[in-house]
Length: 380
Ligand SMILES: *[C@@H]1O[C@H](CO)[C@@H](O)[C@H](O)[C@H]1NC(C)=O
Ligand SMILES: *[C@@H]1O[C@H](CO)[C@@H](O)[C@H](O)[C@H]1NC(C)=O
Image (cartoon, rainbow, N blue to C red; front, side, top):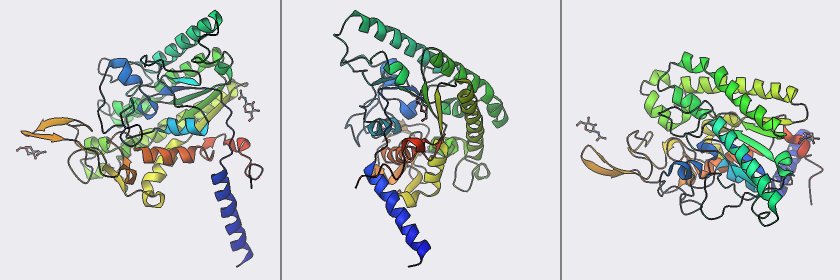
């Protein structure tokens, strides 16, 4: 064995040991999350009284649990990594939910820009931020009254030391394409980000200091968008994704990244981390066999068969009359082979993979390598 080959083998050995050991100490007492369906743990369902049916949730919770997935979301896997319990939704009032370790303001379908009459979710970003302030005021008020609720509510200092996470913007872009040209969607990005910045600044002004911002994924690779906007093959890239949507997502991310840099400069006593989820998801879709997946654009829970198994008329779990026949959009046999759960949302298996990449810190700017000194953290 040559020396360079040997050192390569050693390097791989060290990396695999680090992966097994998992000794990143994130040290967040609580997490406050804002976003859309990518991180909604029950907000939309509770907030508008929508009903989500099985097979949603079948893979892990055995019931939908308010998540647009067959199981856990990226945020659930991240909470595991932080050694914190799954986040309860701010809007979910039934069953005495504990908010001790944080609260989730995300709601499926939410946009950064204010909701309109046709929006899926009325809980746009500014509303989520307002809900957070109401949450914080109420918590401080209740804590001041006595100890009885300590068990369910974050301590006062958790608001300063907690992590503020964001994953929102996908619906502003994806929704835009239904009524706008690509140029118009792209031209709307600066306005969307002004609204986003306003929310972050408000949270900072109220004492938030640790920010973690996910960028938006490759929207053009969502089977829903391929089915709707990709009928003409010239609109698709070599992976079968809608080129215009991915171009818009990349431009959004470029400007979002610049905004996080600007915020980091302005908010000197805060930490603003940008996380490149797009690259992780795009790499997964490009190289799926390498990561143990068998299907990229084929939907697990849908209707219509290959190549997409997605029909805009009927969503996962629904039974409907189509052409005079009653049909059901059912789940596939083994969702762990699939990336797309229902044409819009990723499977639990894909979410687990994405979360495992996020926590390496390699996709973060600044990378959180300072929190994971590779060699020092080794425990033999
Ligand atoms: C920001 O990160 C630096 C470097 O890791 C750390 O020393 C500091 O305590 C962090 N500040 C906050 C508010 O988390
Ligand atoms: C429904 O019927 C129309 C008209 O007969 C036909 O063109 C179409 O392919 C049918 N669609 C399905 C999903 O069977």
